Image 1 (cartoon, helix red, strand yellow):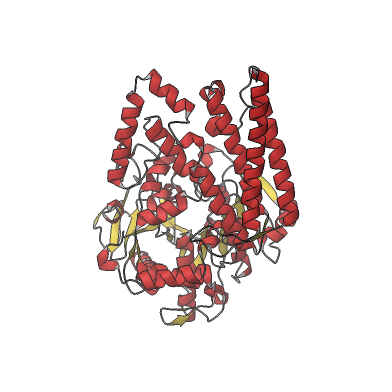
Image 2 (cartoon, one colour):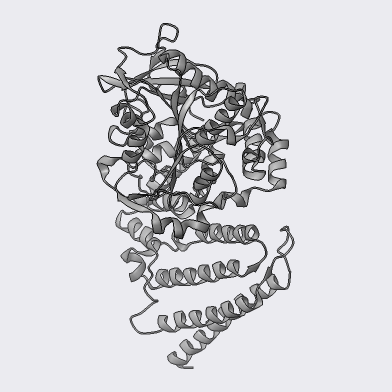
Length: 569
């Protein structure tokens, strides 16, 4: 058989293999033949299944035929994982990348063809995306042309460095996303000047040195998420929301959560509300002598703040004059991708595992959030650190992202059931916290609500839903980008945009988003300026700035950022 006949025969076999293999796989799934050890089978839309199979065969044939053309190994690949010239110049690597992307698209199409409820389809698609991210040819030295080229050029030095990087990451317990040796909390991150003026077993309260001669009479308290460390709000002077608030004339206090150890393994949601959020509000009042304060909650900190305000309202107390909620849930109807992890079985498992005591390790939480974006936050660093022997560049935000915190098991178990699973905070009287029935309808104060358009942790719909729950005067702002980058967007950078609207349509944001945007106004730059203008209207008159920290009763304990934030998980 001559050369051309050999190639033609190989092409036919490849086409038959691709087509038959996919057909068999789809047929087994559609016929209800589950792989060993997995739950009962799922069903597929037969029309979509047939169309997908036909399209796959056509694309596979085109890929193989193009690879047979003189001078061409495979079509150009647009995926940035395979964008380096080494992939294009290596026929085997180029073909493997193209075949991988073809199979990935087919599997995603298969996930979309699943018949069932939205949660089932989301779970299947998530599993497929995780599998495809993990099996990309770029993740393996034997297939990664760029890593191979670097190994040859460096005479094996990149492989030696990669092994050293892998051993280092195994010792520290997580994949390095940045050069962590460059950063030190209190030295080149979390450097805004201040002092610890109160502490208990749950948190330290930081007060910051005024940057203006006068401050507003109502002090300002920030409650960050307890699943992360507070200094995301104080990374560098030019992107610090804390420093920005101080510079705007607010006497600013911040909760710095303790990183729980075994001594806190029995602490509950009630403890965090009573002994942390409510206590912090009271101490700020006592230090400043203010009748009321303004407060901000970020992410889970917003859920904690909202719960605390509902508890105080049930007691007939109203110590907070206005609240700001940044990318926060009160209504957990629309939780996005995180919903796939939550069902009765998973919640019961956590309750049995740690509902009466124990710790949810910080690295487990960090890994979960990283795998929501596996290519960007996991495999990108596996390839760079280990296959190419590179040290990731210094990046303060990624250093913070790797600085994990633990959570008390009972706190976490209560939170899972009553928020993500049963959504009890928005059911008046359903959730009982600190002995009080939670009713958010009693939290009748002005509220500034911010949501990020591309947020995958608190979807924009979840942030907007609070407008339908809280009864007071509300301002809702949508910012560009995601959960962190959207929030940490200082005016000095003059980046991105934000949108405002004079009206807040009833219903959930995804339903009314198009209508909301039609009447919304886009503003270039940071939402911080809009928020600052709003907060000043809630802050009262200006008075002389204090000359020292704390008060006679609450004297400075140590310099900010304090001890608690430096404790590693």
